[in-house]
Length: 226
Image (cartoon, rainbow, N blue to C red; front, side, top):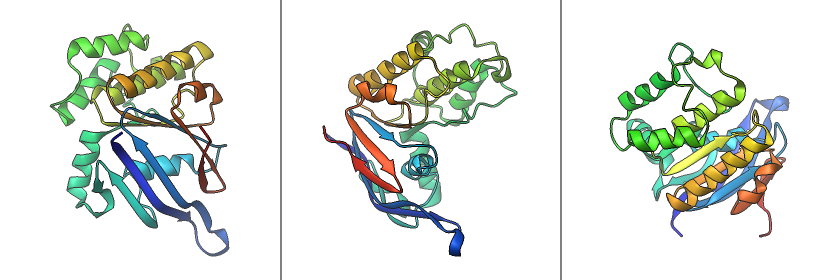
């Protein structure tokens, strides 16, 4: 299998002196194309920090982040931004939807930022149907429930056809039926479209869909036995 993303001996601390917290300790991690990887851990265990470092939104204190064979941290910042735009889809906990745009316009905005390589209209409609949000396109985020916004955020991340999908608690606002649906969708994405899908979560309902399961505790990342 081809490696999509690799973290080597990554360390990250926050604060200084007595208030210093070592959030990630010599973290090693590999995700291949065609795989769904789950990173489990309690709240405050550093899962979001791990994800933002893996996606190049945050820089580690030490260690390497290798994306698609390139040492991401050594790229000039403009190339890094381009790389992120073309290779990585983020599903963040805050949804990151713009409140003053309708759901349809959220996708149009993505199209303006990244003009090529996105899903075509037919594929987008199919994705929206799969997620049960095809009738919400004229609504604004404030008019939707947390679960609906979460599904819109998932669709928006997948719209750009990224090679790597990084999802932070993508099922936290969803009931069991929707969790099942999102789990199946992410698994299908990994396998059928040959993407690396990495989900950080404390939702154990997603375990059944994972190819690899990691546990993040006290800053240490360990892979569960297969």
